[in-house]
Image (cartoon, rainbow, N blue to C red; front, side, top):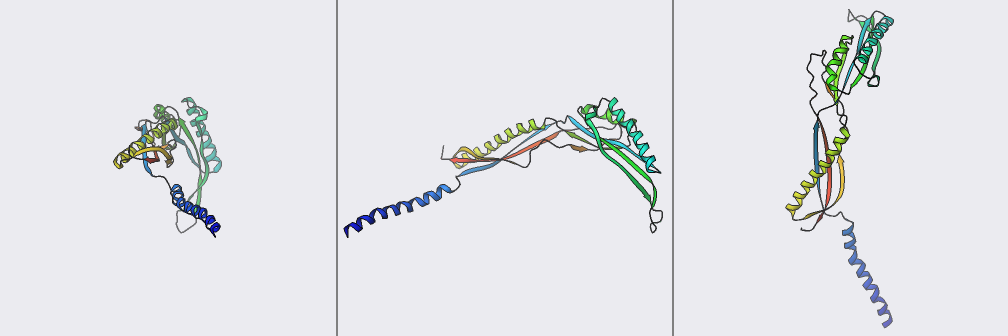
Length: 238
């Protein structure tokens, strides 16, 4: 009988030890105390790239006449671009179409084929936006009668976004330190860093296209924005 009691005692102690460790293990599995904030940064810079779409729209009685007249007019426009110093790699066809045109003198009756419309447009990239007004004048003088919108962009947007990312992290830490000081704690190591949204090089911004060089062109500034979310571990009172 004495032997049985001696064997039960270690088993009872072991069970009590495991039971005591369960709350500690559950606590270790939970998330650590942390401070989570969002940091933001914006950088404004004038654009240094411009893109404009221009071309020729031609109407004629037959498809062949419309196509041939359009091709001849567009050849003059492309030659004018080259003479203006625009490299061939910086312009490409963006639209080419030949569509029948109809008239309907009596709305109750059938439509009548009245001719054909040929359209040929090119997208032109300018690496010096100071030449934009002059290029528009060149295009219109060469016969371009279909000018679309002007778009602006920033060529070194990736580098500027990297600078904004560093500023956004600094902004997040500044906010986190304010919260930590108010709560009587201190910041530990960052637990997570994530970028919110899609901080990518700025897309072309569209502006109204002037129809002549005399029209004012205001490229303004592009704004690049980055937002990051960061969580810091909380330490005890400093």
